[in-house]
Image (cartoon, rainbow, N blue to C red; front, side, top):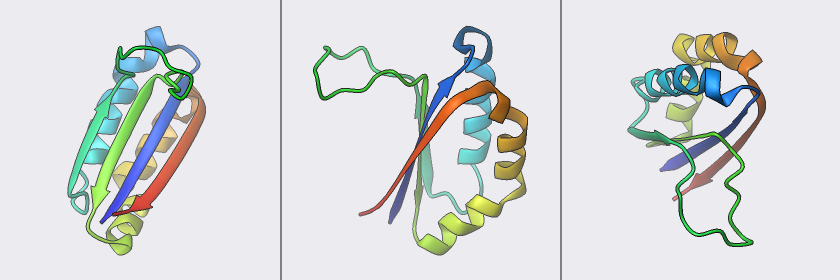
Length: 98
C-alpha cells in the first residue's frame, strides 16, 4: 500500500482554508484512491518534534504505485492544482509504502 501525505501552508488561511479542504475531499475521492483523510493540525500538546505550522493535511491511500500514478494524472487532481496553487505558500509531500 502507498500512503501519500500532503501538507499545505496557505498564504491566507482565514480566507482559503475551506475551499482548499473541499478540493482535497474531491481529489481524495478519485477512483484509484482506496481511502483518504483531510484535516487541520490537532491541538495536541506542543513538543519540539511536532511541526504544526501547516494549515491542511491530506492523506490518500493507494493499493499500488500504479494507482497513485493514475491519481497524479487524473483530471480532478490536475484541476485541483490549477484552481488552488496560488493559495498555498508551500506544499510538502511524503509518500511511503506500508
